[in-house]
Image (cartoon, rainbow over all chains, first blue to last red; front, top):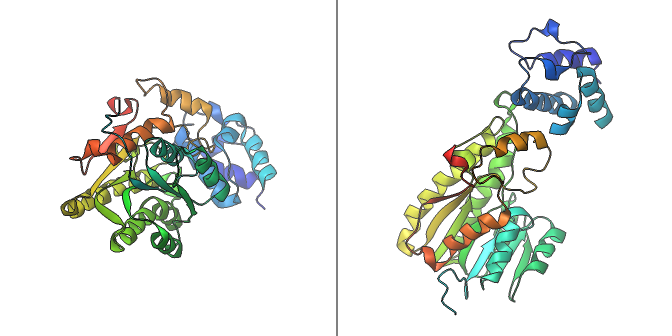
Length: 77
Length: 248
């Protein structure tokens, strides 16, 4: 089972322009300039690959912070 | 008033993927147009739900998983001689290119392309597709206008079109016509399974001049045209049914 910190790092890997240091557990990712529907799809694919959890578009839309999303992943495991 | 060049009276038609969505409506509308319809799908309960909504007599439901060659063979064996085949069974996938694995392609291509091609082959080989018959494939406008995450799905649908055109060429001398319908977004389980949010849909709807997504029956009507004698001189075409999406 991966930790919150590991999740934050994997989450940050989906971005190209945004430096990993800008993304923490408490970051509201919707506010990031680079956030897009493609990155949302990438996050869903990453969670499928790393956690074997099928997130829905609404999970990503309705979570605010990276930690919120991590908690959803854990709840679905 | 009995003149109706779009009638399917006296025709026997096989519709795959008939347990939901476009296939379900196509099967029901074919029955209303007078055809005897054979429907296939994987889910027995939902397939019988389709059967119960069909009009007229002489229809049958055959549970078939087109991902399995043994089940295709069984279907070919029990299938009556056809005047129409609707290769409609399909599946979707939404995944960015940098996450794709071989199995993602295999799963989607198996259903969208291999299953349809191997069923068509089996039926042709056993002479179960009559002279003058019509084969219709459900493709997608995503083979032209795609979106992030659709590379596997869109390429599988583009492959169907290439396959369809070759079939049209090879089978023309038997009078067998092959065509495809290319739906835009249609309200079915395929798009309501969760990757798209309502917000995404609202934004996407701006690209539809007619202001709404398609209904399965919108596509079924195009399929009926291609199955009927009204399209006797039509082969190898892609019939776009998309509420104007390709205009934008």
